[in-house]
Length: 126
Image (cartoon, rainbow, N blue to C red):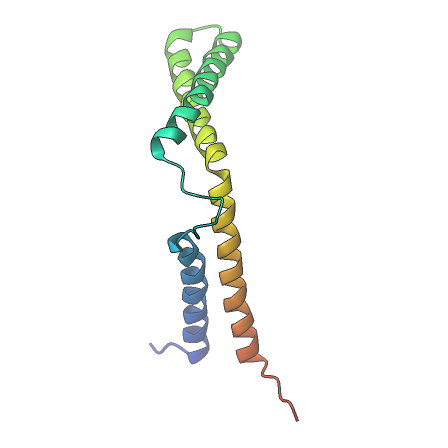
């Protein structure tokens, strides 16, 4: 089975878009950039409070809504609340760096899209 050239072109374009988006995660931070990489220890310590709050909310939510077999469900609710709280705390602690990476990824993808548009719609200056 032969693959048409238009499909090959679209596959190459999709690959370029993905590479442009992922390339933003590999860029080095500029020395004057305020979005320096946070340390893992600091991020995890700041997320512990969120994890504890999430665990308490999970346990209370189960205890207040269930009438039977509260124990097992309360533990499970606490673990789920802890995981959600910890994830939210990490996301909040790294929001500056995440937004910088997202801006760079958007710029890279937009450049690839512009190049593709110019390739498909050449501008002829007479």
